[in-house]
Length: 167
Image (cartoon, rainbow, N blue to C red):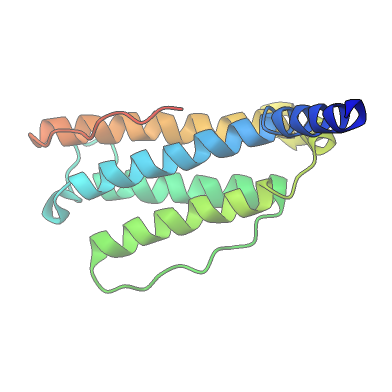
């Protein structure tokens, strides 16, 4: 009986520890970030995808495309994410939303395969040497930054933003 309790304890502890790594934490946040960005993108009427608050800023559509391009660039250069096959749905809004999902999922599929030691690896980045963990944080931070701008676009178009999705 003691042996069974000990084995059970070890298994439960291992499972709990496996769920508390930078990779699992990132993947949980990444999935929620994707869901929230999709809700933001779906909230904007398609005819407002060309809206831009000032000449200096990107349109709503350009913001979404920029987010995807950054995921592709960081993913390919630092995590060997293969270029995702993009959707060619005819409707512009649907196509962009589908491609946002594809971009997020491409990053997720590769990050799921990483081991913790890989996150400590240093890579050359334009801002100097960074760890892969720092690049993961940059991936999420970049999405958050531009999603905030998209929420301003929604508000300026009198569209109520979706409820925040955090952890």
